[in-house]
Image (cartoon, rainbow, N blue to C red):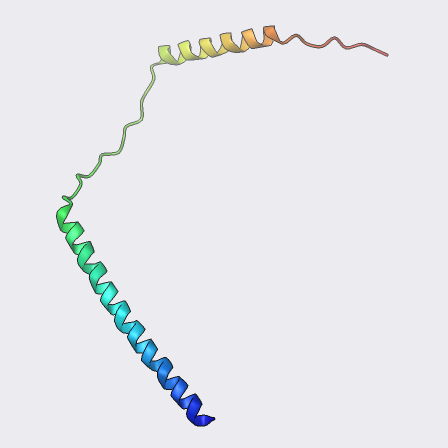
Length: 86
């Protein structure tokens, strides 16, 4: 039984070696592809951060007035229920 176990361990070690060799080869291929793709793509120019848009006081007031008008129309459309005392 010890011989069978020893032979099994040797077979596993051979498979591990074969897998490690295959992984090294795949990593080398991947590294070459990454180098090639990096060489093909030109470096993108650095983007400047987008500036926040500033509204004038007049524009903010127009927006606020329009929103108040919408809310008033909505409140007017929904009538409050009449409370009845029991």
